[in-house]
Image (tube, rainbow, N blue to C red; front, side, top):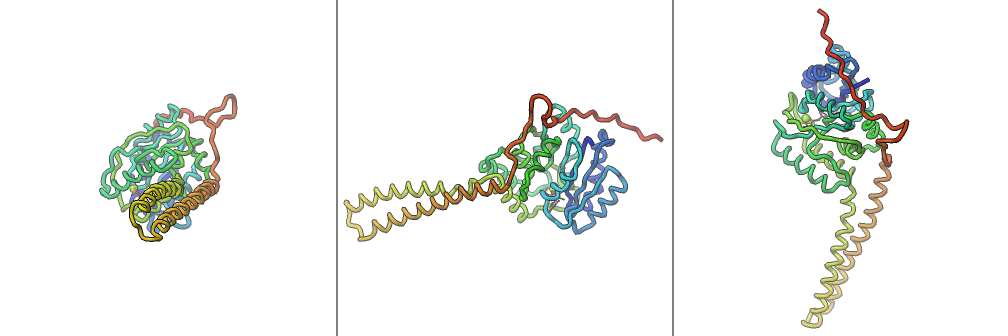
Length: 325
Ligand code: UDP
Ligand code: MG
C-alpha cells in the first residue's frame, strides 16, 4: 500500500462527511492503493455513524473506534498503528489543515525527506488567547527541551514508513507525537500553510486540555525543571558566601545583637544544602524517568550494502482514471 491517511475524530459528526469528501479528492492520484483511517476517539455524538456511512460510500475509508475517549494523541497513535501504507499522512478532522497540500508534501518526500510537516504561517478563526498561548508554548518548550521541536507545527505531516516505525517503537504512554517525530531524526522539512478555521463544531482543546498537553510535552522532552533545584542551590550558596562577608564586617564594625550572625548564616547555609540535596535527587529521578521510557537509543538511516531500512522511494501517482460512462 502506498498511502495511509490517519485522522483522529472526537465528536466530529458534522466535520466527518466534509472531511471525507475533501480527502477523497486530495488522494485521487494515489487512490488505487490508499486508505483513509478514521479513528473515532470514543465520541459521544454521531461520529461513528458518520464514519460507517463514509465507509459505505467510499471503500477507501476504514474506521476504527476506541472504547473510550483517550485523547487526541492516543487516538492518533491508534490510527498510526493501524496504518499499512509506505507513506502516512496525518491531519485533524476539522479541516483546519488543508488536505490539498498533500501533493506538495509527496513531492518533498520524493526528494528524500522522511518527514514533511506543515508549519502554520497564519491561523484563522482562532481566539487571540489560543494564538498567544500557542506562540509562547512552542518558544518555551524549545528553550527547555533537549530536542529541537519545530515551532508552530501541529500533527499535520506526511511521514515515511521508517520514520513512523521509529515513533511507534517508542513505548512511552504520555505521547507528544510532534516531539517524538522530531526526536526520531531522519531528514525533515517544513511546508508553510495557512491554518483555516474549523469547518464545524468547536475546539476539543479547552484550556484544561491545553495545559495537560503542554505538561506532557515539557515533562516528556525535558528534565530541566528537575534540575532547577541544583542551580538554585548554587545561587543560594553564593549568596551565603556574600552574606558571610557582610556579617563578618558587621560584627567587627557595629554592635550587632547577639546570635544574629550565627542565625543568619546557619539559615542560609542549610537552605542551600537542602536545595543541593533536592537537586541531586532530581538528577536521579530525571534519569530514572528517562530510563523508564525505554525508548530505542538510535535509529539507522543509512547503511552500506544490503539491509539498511528502506529510504522513502519515489511514488509515481497513477494516471487519473476517468469513470467509464
Ligand atoms: N481529538 C481527539 N480526541 C480528543 C480531542 C480531540 O481525537 O480527546 C481530535 C479532534 O477530533 C481533531 C483533533 O484531535 O481531529 C484536534 O482537535 P481540535 O481541532 O479540537 O484542536 P485545535 O485545532 O482546536 O487545537
Ligand atoms: Mg482544530
